[in-house]
Image 1 (spheres, rainbow, N blue to C red):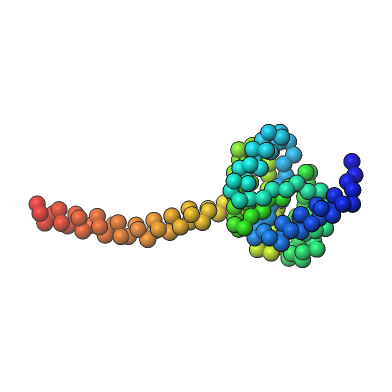
Image 2 (tube, rainbow, N blue to C red):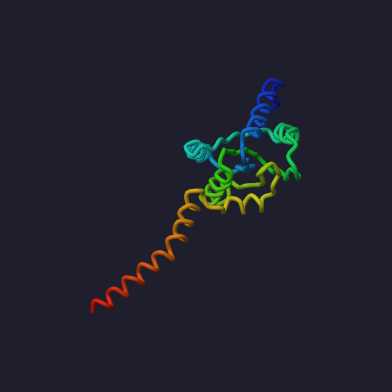
Length: 163
């Protein structure tokens, strides 16, 4: 069923706004997913500060191409939604988590990262980057490891001298 010009303008504006405010944007194919699972996914994404919007592909393509991103817009098969956030890696990471949960009924088909269009493979590699909190924890562990080894060695020397 065709949509009205007002609705098309609304969709165009929503996609353009998402492209402006987002640090990264993921194109999501969600074809064979029941409404209950989509609703649960939207709720979970919203709780993590990620916006999710289903848009007509032709209108979305026009809005995204008008923004002047570098690279080539990837092929967008089937029904497409956009997921975006202020966090650079969160949309890709969370959609990837749902992709694993739903046996690929939801999948990443591309996106926009750092002002450039990215294909599926590039967005999947971005999705595998841990969150900032996890990276900080890993960094602290790396710093702590030599110190911990030194403390263990000093304790062993102290125990040997006492015996």
